[in-house]
Image (cartoon, rainbow, N blue to C red):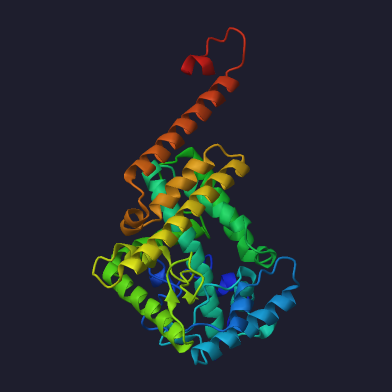
Length: 375
């Protein structure tokens, strides 16, 4: 059996898996209930759901490790499998697992996990990093400001668990991010080059490679969403009830869209291939709209609490860029949303620069224009 570096960073490469992993190619595809055809799609038990949903803030890491081991074993039982990967493809879904639990698996805490389990967990961590960086990269290109991409990556690293931050590679990679950020501040329009251990550069290279691969079609997404919905209909029938698509109705088995990603909800809402009933499309559209409103509100709240005048606008730009054309159409978000966010970002940035120049020019009769001159 392969010997694995006990460091999750060392084992997977830059930021949880710069090399090949079974999740990287699927980073833009569906997840949750709309699983890929190669993976086993199951409705997990209450026991597994409880373990996956646990938040481990403040809990001893040995307890986190034990729970992670139990969660994996429960997932195997629910899926009827004994390994996390088969022919290089995932057999279980780790997307609901707590971050510290994933790190416990990826780093082989207390030698409780197999190499394949470590690889699967590292792949899920990599997938989450990629999901955060994808919209940020699109926004950076749009704004010609790669410092915003590095700022997003720095915030992501700073939010990692305490155990991750003790890993020597975390310190190296965060230092690389800071170096890249400083370079980008000097020349925002150019992606920093030749920074050792730079997770952003690694992501950009892999994103370019992924773009060259054949993407999953929207029809494929719709078919997988149809299969996931049919599974819920079958579950309701087995329980001698019906699947209820109306949240105001309190009978039957309520449809559960929590495992559907936004692209899957969009496929149901738009119903381009006529695979869904009108009631299914309406329910999915309502769920997607509620999810989008909550996300926009959260972006404003985070921007207000960050102390960065650019944060809210940048967050909205990244949110728009992270949506597919189908998601925007289904959620009713037009290009004017992006235009307004970009305009606000640029105006705020210019005002900040002008204020900085005015403040740095000193007072008296220097002749330098003041902020009021600009306004």
